[in-house]
Amino acid sequence: MKISIIGTGLIGGSIALKLKSKGIADFIYGIDNNTDHLNEALKLNIIDAHADLEYGIRNSDLIILAIPVDAARKLLPQILDLITEKQVVMDTGSTKAGIVQAVKNHPNRSRFVAFHPMWGTENNGPKSAISESFAGKAGVICNREESSEDALKTVEKIVESLDMHTIYMNAEDHDVHTAYISHISHITSYALANTVLEKEREEETIFQLASSGFSSTVRLAKSHPEMWVPIFKQNRENVLDVLNEHISQLRKFKSALEKENYGYLEELISNANKIRGILDK
Amino acid sequence: MKISIIGTGLIGGSIALKLKSKGIADFIYGIDNNTDHLNEALKLNIIDAHADLEYGIRNSDLIILAIPVDAARKLLPQILDLITEKQVVMDTGSTKAGIVQAVKNHPNRSRFVAFHPMWGTENNGPKSAISESFAGKAGVICNREESSEDALKTVEKIVESLDMHTIYMNAEDHDVHTAYISHISHITSYALANTVLEKEREEETIFQLASSGFSSTVRLAKSHPEMWVPIFKQNRENVLDVLNEHISQLRKFKSALEKENYGYLEELISNANKIRGILDK
Image (cartoon, rainbow over all chains, first blue to last red; front, side, top):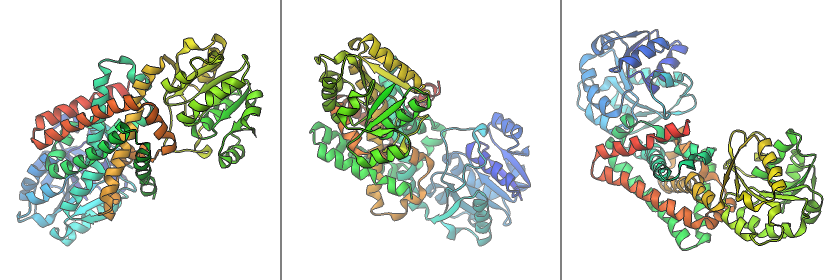
């Protein structure tokens, strides 16, 4: 299968590496506005050749979009304009309602499959690509009924080749769920980093004490705005709902401490401990 | 050197394993109210024998306190009552101002060294002990001037044997710093877990999507209240200060989203990204 990967960074690069190692991809065209990334991806054997958008699309069986969600939403209709009814397009974006809406009435809508692999790191660029990154994680396909059966089958085969388990969901539900399970984690992590950085202005030594617990909680705060501002923008209402809920949960801890109500504090912590049973399932 | 370890859980157990492997400990007495932990620690070769408090103390060169900070604060004066001026006592608690205050005027104060190893996990009990856990982390010694020179030397040797680098700090500064670098991380993690668990009541499928980012941010929410309620209690004022600051940082994200001010959102995220340079130093 010939594949074009638009966006040769963390996600696009990791998919390319895995599909090559599985023998699914005979040839991979890399398409990217960032020529440094293209050269790096070529050097790292992630892609086999550069291509411009039109050439890559015309010569591929499958086109994989792996760019920030705002850019993907704009580009997808143009890609669908260019393809025949034998080609398949999939995206990898962290929000799904917007992109599905953008092509709802496109004559080639059924050639597109909306996909989101539940994996990422705080790093970016081809150098951060990891072949085995997706193994064992969930791969979400949204609004399957809007895709042709053969297009769906092609993407299901890709998801399987990534060693992911497929979950089907509608785009709106997906965006609510990811607000809880991914987007809010990034906001708390950013806010925690800003809290501590604010303090560091006065106290240079503070980071000498940084423990593994801190590093773990603040890891996501390294994630780049180019990727995350568009996600928060597209999922604004859901993220605001969850953020309000999160602030009100933090206020419970504040109230327990202010009132020195340690029975209540214990209750809040014991409840949070239930996450152990769920995550370790 | 003969050592008594009071509290044979995660921290006490990990210290015991490391000191044995380094040949520092000839014999380790385990002292613990939890007999299951004692039996487990014996079986795992973490300790060489059980002992009651008095017997263990009378027969040890060094006594290491590794129990929750409220219990440690109560027990330390009693331990100092029992020792001679040739013995040394150290603690391992996550808050330091309280315990230092509790023995300020004790005639044997100088035999005690206030210590905090900057390592921990969300697990507890002897089974979770790891010999190499402390390597490369900071070991903080507080109020060194209140300890005898020889007691300080003994503890410095222990810290070195744990492969930690020693940092000296006064107890009040330590408690401010750990509020920022450790205690607030736990509260945000607990609150995040509670936010998502609240939603899970309605949506059973939500955790199918849990990504590695979520697991990383919420990992500390598995930490037990037996350890953490006393820490928050003893460091209440500092933790409240940082919690207020953290909530106000979250409100900035809320305001940026509400006002659809994506330039400001990008600014907040770019600022948070500075944590990368500091953590990766």
